[in-house]
Image 1 (spheres, helix red, strand yellow):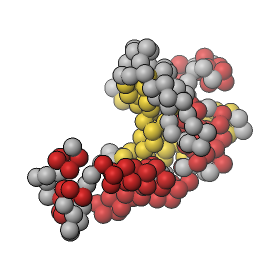
Image 2 (cartoon, rainbow, N blue to C red):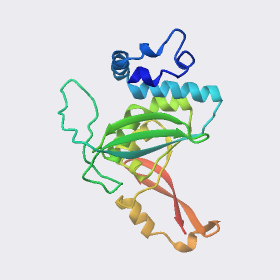
Image 3 (cartoon, one colour):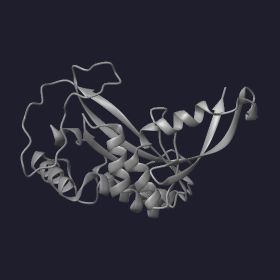
Image 4 (spheres, rainbow, N blue to C red):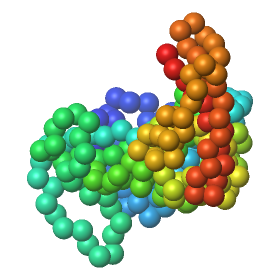
Length: 226
């Protein structure tokens, strides 16, 4: 089946000289998948993305992190082995309103000039967004910051947790996010705002600058009203 797919494809141009369709069989594919697993798919992708960005001469001043979910059909009841770190296709919070289906989560980071993904990682379907963001900032943001030389790290309100903000603060990484009103201090500050102090920003939008000190980390906040 796999060799048949490549039967009429320009294989030597796609892969390299001397490669024929019959060389691309199930055994070869299996060995490739094993090698990718050992090396780390996310790590390989990040290196490739860096070369693409350099080749295109793209200079980005920010990267954007987000998470999306894909639901799948099937049971997927095979137990995890002790010596593997493969992800689990399991039930979790479903934004597709299909809580009865198993799902997988894709964590994706794109640069802000051409929208090219510079990092991706698949994670188990029951992973919490805030926990996933916190894990990423601890393990990967330092090398991503060095590779992309981006000043700002942008994400939605799931970024604003104690673990994540503390990690960003320790690494001196600037960030832009929405502060969720589930944070008690943020809600108190919002309720104490004098609306007469809001200044016009654009048509139909007023705002003001403020400061928020939380978990030992200071941040500038924009308070806006439409």
